[in-house]
Image (cartoon, rainbow, N blue to C red; front, side, top):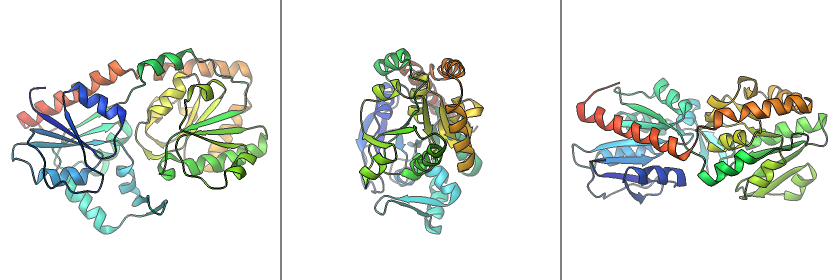
Length: 335
């Protein structure tokens, strides 16, 4: 890229860093919620997640510099449903009227937006498409070595093992509470069901969960668990395009997702559910009761949509998006 680019991390994600390095961006870290009082001079600033920080940066940089937000989390969805997740209290709460006013103001200051997946792109256009700002859709990727491993997996479809992949603390966005509730109900019909939760979560009464067939495994290598799984659940509420869904599908494991999970765009319709518990439970039980031959057919087909999430393809899409945003802002062309 000809122009100097600065990527401002607010949470930090290895995929985001990898993409930014591909366009030669410098990287600094500003904790989400903190106000940047000083920033070095760049012509383009890309902010991870926070449209509020992006808006504040816009007021502090040189006049012809541009500021873009990389939308990669549930903030847009939470604004839509008037909710927010309180990390300190570990609970979902109503969004304050002041926060909504600040959000509306902040969106007006953006020069562009990059969204992970179509779901976030649609949310942004639906309610916060201010001043015709250019928006582009990009995707994460499955790391090359992991990609090769997952493609070789032959899942044990005759088992009754369900896997969930995702880190906390925001159980509401990840839908972990709903996963556990629906698992418990499905287990009443299929007693041998087991649920492995892969990711970092703070939990209490772990022994009680184990008695129910629910196992919090922590942040571990997912490959051994995918090999013995026959189904994955991801019942998100506003999550961006999580690459974990693509990883499960590349392994040949069908994944039931909610209609508010970003990765739903690659999931077959019969595996997409509303947040209605009864509907989710029926899908779990119905799938588990299929004969092995049918499960193998589904497993073979389920790999196909996820094969495109390679590092090379993700980088290509991202570079094109940045290039298009650069051309649009330089020529002042709204879309």
